[in-house]
Length: 178
Image (cartoon, rainbow, N blue to C red; front, side, top):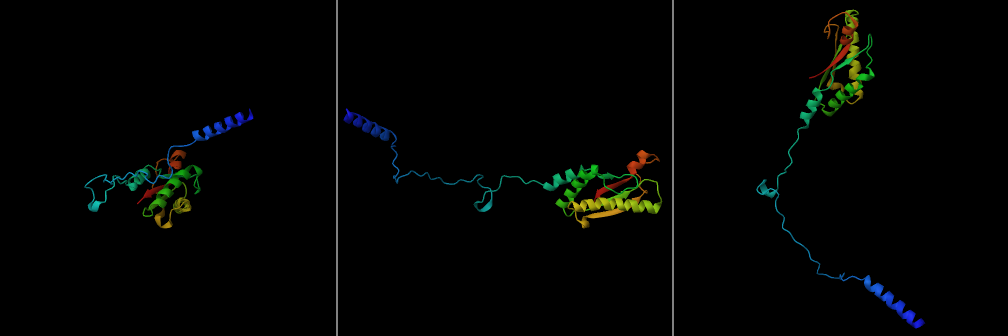
């Protein structure tokens, strides 16, 4: 009986090993290789057999100019102050990015004041406002050679009138690309 069991186990193991086998010969040196002749994508394009690119060029300066034209150009200030308010940081950031991207661009920053105060005082305050904006731009990547800070004091008001709403519109720095 034991001999019969051993014979049965031996034949079962042999059958199992035979089932795991493969008919593919691993040492076959006649592996088929497909050969193809390269063909040109656009026959006749380009001299000397070099195919021309099908990709059209993109003018990045066109998009930059369009984006630049949509940027806000005025920074407003509080009374008797030349501190750039946090609400104008995105404006400053955007202009600094334009200037740092294209070093050929020049920006004039014109400082203005409301009608209150003497002429010399307003010219000095307008200059400080323009320089504060210029300093913010240089801290964000613009170069000094790209910026020009000038003051017009109270000489070029944006709004006429002698009330707080008109004065608030006149306390500003205007950004103009040249």
